[in-house]
Amino acid sequence: MTADPAVRREQSDSPLEETIGFARAVAAGDRVLVSGTMPLVDGAVRGEGSPYEQTLLAFGNALAALEPFGLGPDSVIRTRMYLSHARDADDVGRAHRELFDAVRPATTMVVVAGFTDSRVLVEVEIEAFRADGGVTE
Image (cartoon, rainbow, N blue to C red; front, side):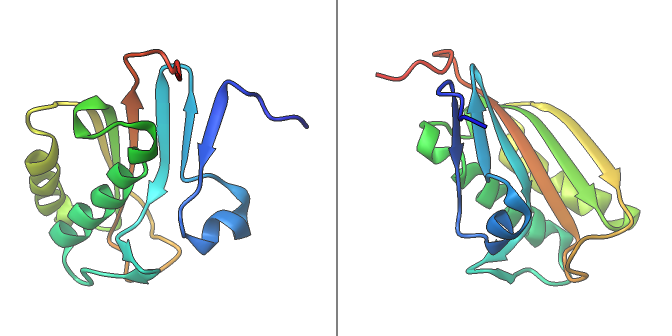
């Protein structure tokens, strides 16, 4: 299989990327997709027990994955939030609003059975738009 030169992949320091075989972020055309991102700092779950704190951390990690593409929160057009408990929806929504209220991306929030680490309460994904259509100098 040969790599498509129009598609750019960026890795992070997550060991799962190598184990599972995925990229943290993939740019194709005018879109940058960021893989499911957990509230990890230096490979360890942070904000244990706080869905609000975990949401801020997870989105912070996901937004950091946009930086190599020169993008930030203003370019986010879609977010997805996966929660392990419906009771956390208000806290997760509050964190999302604080980060994206001015941007207003299309958003989905769903409750899932759980995550690969039981201390994780929320995992997020983002999709961003590149106004330059992915053209690089």
